[in-house]
Amino acid sequence: MCDNGKARKVKEFKPITPITAAELDELDVAPIDWLVDKILPVGLSILGAPSKYYKSYMALGLCVAICQGAEFLGFNCNKHACLYFDLESTKRRPKNRLDQIVGAFKKKPNNLYIITGEENPGRIGEGFEEQVAYQIEEHPDIKLIVIDVFQLIRQPAKRNQTGYDRDYDDFRVLKQIVDEYDVGILLIHHTRKMRDTTDVFNDLSGSTGMLGAQDCAWLITKKERSSDEATLHITGRDLESLDLKIEFNKKVFQWKYIGTEQEVEEQREREEYEQSSIVETIKKLVKQGNGRWEGSAQEIKNASKYLSREIYDDVRKIGNQIRRYEQFLHFDGICFKDLGQKGRDRKRSYLFYDVRNVQDVRNVQDVRNVQI
Image 1 (spheres, one colour):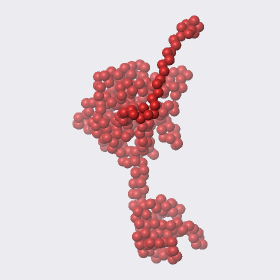
Image 2 (cartoon, helix red, strand yellow):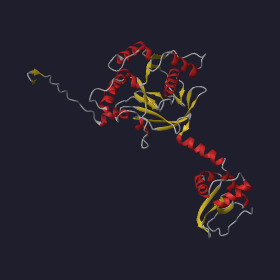
Image 3 (spheres, helix red, strand yellow):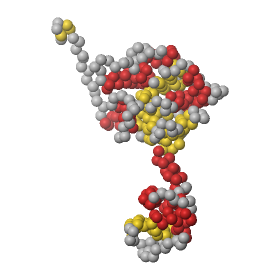
Image 4 (cartoon, helix red, strand yellow):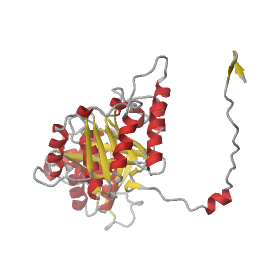
């Protein structure tokens, strides 16, 4: 075939033989190869966070844990060598950080290989792929490659190139490295300044292809920038999505796992419940009422002056707190019923009763108030 007199190569058709579902069922497919059990598989992954969120400390601490076969955020690591591209630094910064993480006078892993920006390893298409291939050939035990930061190995966008096409081109090259050498690549990346309240992973800077190309994605978020506490959101193709509450310990310069988001929130609510003057007052009112007390939020507030620490919240907030603490009160043997608005002043009234002493509250007619 010709185009304007020039011969054009014709791509030879190669038929593909599909596999049946029955044949696929008989295949012995290898299980997921985990770098960190349950949260980081071998493959292309990304760690995103705003600037100054200690994501480089997280990445370096991750490498140390994998190199030692230790735990990371409470999850077991499989021992392998790691290659860390610290592209924003000279050798001084990773040296100082390793002293902080491991200890100034402790032995550092001899299977953690570090390349810094001063060595100019090249961008994608300008020597980066060859540099990775060389390092893996020299150190075949490398299983994780960290690129800190992703932006510094990318080529500038081509003229008229969309963000999606640019992301696709870069990820295609990185995927080839992952598949050819059976390694994990973790890209350290920034997030957008504008937050997306519908999906935290939409905060990753780049096109919609940024997340779609990843086998695994981690994202660090905080309620307040100055807080040491954060949430590590984890999602991926072959792993369960998790929201882990973590805290950056500035004494050892490491991220520590403190529980799932739900566990931490429940613990906080429990501590708040234990220290609540509203709860303390209710318990004493029920005790003085021989296992039963009925009254309004205003009466609870008035009684607090004599039975516990004085409550300064308005009655609406007290009512909200009572409903919020319902589960904890139940565990302590106290149940309540919202009796609605009663009396001339239409105050909302509640009936509290100790289930260990009162078997049936449906027929309660009398109102027992504590004499203050």
